Amino acid sequence: MIDNVSGFGLIAVDKAAGRILSLDPGSLQIQHVIDDLPRKPHELLIPPGRGKAYVPIFGDGVHGDNPHPGHHVAVVDLATRSLMKLIDVSPWRGPHTARLGGNGLVYCCCEESAVIVVIDPEKDAVVGHIRMESNKVHRLATVPGREHLITESEEDGTLSLVQMEGENGRVIKTVKAPSGLNGIDAALTRPWVVATSSERPELFVFDRDELALLRTVALPGHVRHAQITRYRPDGEILAVIGDFDPVASFYDADLKHLFTAEVQDKPLDGAFTPDGLHFLAANEDSGSISVIDLAKGCTARHVAVPKGCEVLAYYPLQPVAHTDC
Image (cartoon, rainbow, N blue to C red; front, side, top):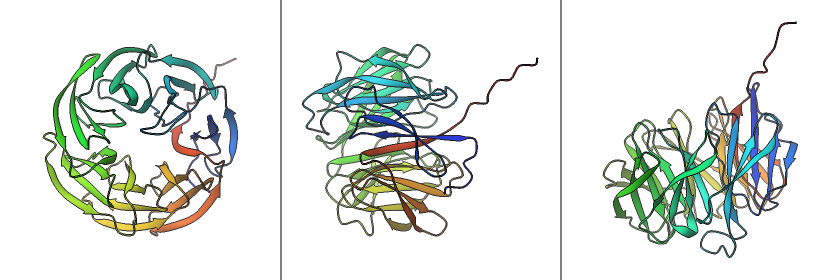
């Protein structure tokens, strides 16, 4: 059981089966299933305070090989655990990573179109778009305290700095990385953006304002390159997940290596528990979630979930309104 989760819900995306799952936040067992979705959902965003989640419908393929790219973003009501709406992002195709900007708008990569669509969460509608100077755009990060986005193009091996401008924006700088790229995240307490190499077990550290490469960090215990990088909400711990490599590494805010833990087959993404004491790694091919104890520096256990679980996130439950009789 996961402790200290009273008052929280847990949602997961089962990419292979095309479902969105509500899990028990402590036992990780399935409580509810949403399966009336187009194929296939990827990724997950829960903007704070809105009581809903955004799940891009990527299509039936994978990055770089998506023969029938999707054109919707699903909106899920977290209280009723139901599908509220499908936002049509046409003519753009292949929606993937979505992040909340400092201006309150949602920015979502449309990989196949090399476009970022801008969604107003008040209207749940597309209100603008930003054309990228790249071959596809798979992931993005929002920069804390700045009206900037940073995107990565895995094919080009580039990072782009994007200025938000109302409901649109523009690319103001693009730099070449030492290799192809994979995952990306912006540090909360340091002026950095981190990105994983798609070729070697390395983490690149870039200046968040100029995109200058500051240093390269090794990934001990990784045989292959890594994929996702994800900061704990307080910015004090960074998780780096292997790509088809059953390991996850953890670093402090200064990128000092803390430990590397074993996970299971094809880890894709993960989430920190609300108290910040554990990290849950979703292993798509093994049908499991690895529970990693951050204080002990090891994997505590593996919990069976459906195969295809890609990404998951905790969220605070909304208080139930009471009226006096």
